[in-house]
Image (cartoon, rainbow, N blue to C red; front, side):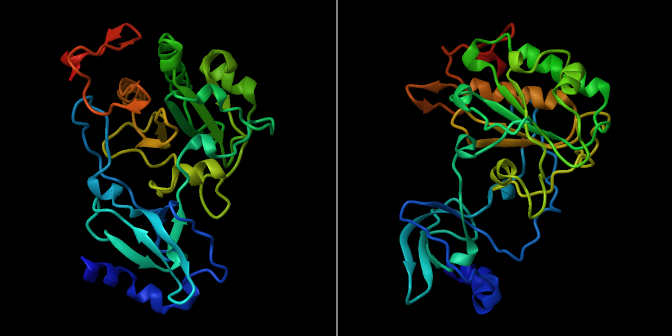
Length: 306
């Protein structure tokens, strides 16, 4: 395994222009990710796969093969490396390794740690987002999403708002590129007042490239593909919301990425995330127990649905 690791990093180590002149400060305990700055990842498109239980879609295993580790020792001036523990979950880089700082990127653990601004330039208050599931999606043109897509999204949001307050997801809509409409336009398309339905229109900013806004830098840490409305899933309808959507779990971490396709895929994925309740301060991932019941907009999600 060590040999394989050297194959990955030997060339970068020998090329001085590929790491920073000023070394970033990594502290013991920091969560980091191994990143080759010369690798182009934004053109990768994940393969469509059926979800095991709820007919949603999940990425192939290799998409989770981003090398996440924990800093064991800070920067060593003699070796010019940082000691990282990559664990044992990936195939190519694992165990304790000494890595040049230029190949390390700090991992932001939660969306709630990211400074974001709403459409009017004010700081987003994340207080109401604590402990709730969230959805982040972008809209890049005034006419790229059909009226049907807006109405369908609006119905999905209102359906979830029938849940108990703790199980009502929040929706953050990020304008980018050519979208230049205001809150009134979005409210007219969705058919309701945003503030009363857990929806926030964010400040217009980039979601790709070197000027990517902080929120999307966070969202794309482990899903670095380009955000583009033309990337619908293979054999899926293109008359829908084709930009990727990110599902945020109750702790504020990215749970999954829903590719372009029918909005029902988004609805089912949100339902699946809400089911994964927080009990006694800890996430209980996986299938609900036989005696667990969660009532979501008229459906009891107990064992029979799995």
